[in-house]
Amino acid sequence: MDDLNKNIKKMYLRINGEVNDHEIPPTPPKKGKTFTLDEDQVKKLEEWQEHIKAIYGKYGDYEYRFSSSGIGQIVEVYSGLADVTLDLTDVDKW
Image (cartoon, rainbow, N blue to C red):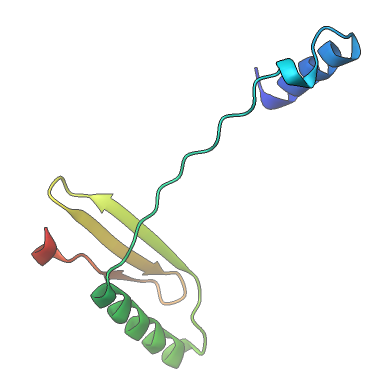
């Protein structure tokens, strides 16, 4: 059942007095993940971004990619403006 139908059912049950807000279980919190860059990676990223700005006059949009190789984490940043990917993977820290 999609969210719209669930909400309609809840409203129907409330209107007919079959359930109140205290009987409806709360929505579970959403889970999230955080990925971080170390100082060296941030320095390389900022230098790269400054070069892109110098060439194109603006920073543009970036897509950050974090993936696992089975041994360590692969970190890549893609610039849509420059159509270039910067590899920030640090295999020395695996």
